[in-house]
Image 1 (cartoon, helix red, strand yellow):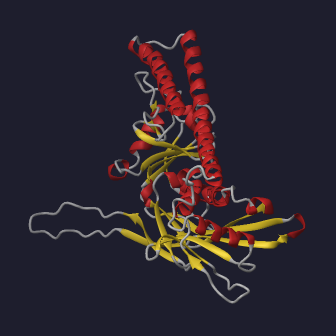
Image 2: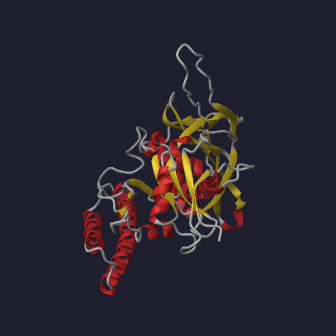
Image 3: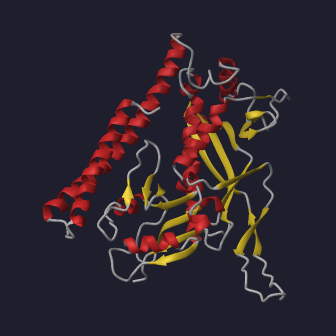
Length: 418
């Protein structure tokens, strides 16, 4: 549940939007352009909304960190049970200590953990992949929220992952063949008692590989030994964000050759006019882009707009033919804002608006398949930074992505060539 401070900021944001919207609506009702004073107020309102957006994010992040710290220190002092990672598992403190033993290397050197969902054993499990120096293997159930935290941090930096793509999680990394649609069936009229024509949809096979993404994290030995530190939360956040940045970039801009087939390879639905500011779209361009996607995809629950933050800022200044803004703020904290009535998600890896750039995507993102292999593998080395008394953790993710319906499930807006 959102805090009172965040709720008040959200209410303030909505009030500012209503004031800004009134300016545009009044001018439209009187069939006139904005006066210099109104234009100045409009710009000021937009700037204030941007600052409030940043404040809301900062407040939510700060309160989340504060709660995690309070939980850890309360558990350490014995004032109340830890509401964080230990209390969310049956093993509690014993399981936390098990993980810390792995982090300290007490069970033998060069072991690794694989964090993944396993329906047969429970929500999450981890496996020691390398035999310890004593010649034994250890396995158990780790805190369920660790996987969730890891994936949450990966998703939060990738707009594509926020748009509801179809995620395939496979146990092995062999190439996976997925059928992609290149043309749909078409019907034709037939005379009475005449032959009904046949027209099969056109398919081809799209391979999904297992490209490797990795990050090395170094942690001071003191942090590992300090039981008050949320070691799992730290590793989940740092690894999730790092892997999300790398994988997320390719899900947007990948060429499909030795990397995922990115969203920007989708068909161009609309090309901007030769006039305008740096290829920025007009209201008519956005409407045309929306309706370049056929109704079944356009009406899907996974239908989203995707663009970079700066591009989304420009949407706030666009009005329809009667002067009403086409961008609407979300009435629910944490939900996406709306553009022409459809959810709008920011992705930092989308190209900036420019002539010739594919800066806006619209369509049914469930037709974009993301393949993940197993889980995220963690490995520890005490030797890599031995001279600095640092323990090095390596996190590796294997995955791929592709658009399986190339007939127009997702369309791109491209800025004018000149």
